[in-house]
Length: 278
Image 1 (cartoon, one colour):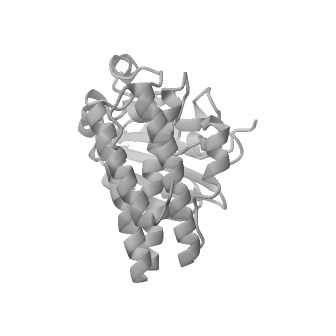
Image 2: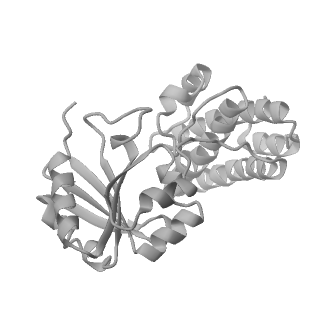
């Protein structure tokens, strides 16, 4: 497949070669990983280590790499900032900007490993990072199982917000209710689905729901179809009930497999408030 970002990387490396403030450029993400490699919809993820981050923060430096159509900045891991750009019509490039000190800190604290553990490639390396990075980054992915306290707390959190969302619906606060049902509760449902899959066998659950339709159990995929709502009170209530039932099933099974205490009383309390008989 043709590299859609070749010209941007070439321009960046040319800039880095003549700019002593740029100490390293590291490609991460789909452009370098072997599992689920880049396709026509993939972006380009870069870590830029520079002594002058402000010219990246303002967008001045990214503009040297091509025609920028959309650009904004947001905080990222390790105290750095991320400049996100669309070049031309659809080529999205995410640039994580670090000073050498911030990158060193993120590397040693394990924060950088989170985005580098599926693979990385040094496009520019003036400070011998090729010798340093392997001390802190292992190109393998592991997914820890929840301890008993974390599991118990999350399940109670979920059932608490079942009642909270239902109260919002009854009061007529549809926006707040929907954001909880299809936002916060879905985050907890996803985390439970991850734990359910991990304790059911060897599984790579990625992060933030990425490739969910590939790694989730087919029965989960069937039921999750009913867990999202239109902006409608009755539909939100239906989605809330479906989310409750799917979470309950996954949490009970996960608790049994992990040997954790399952807060049955919390589940029953939420079910009563939702008007469920099961």
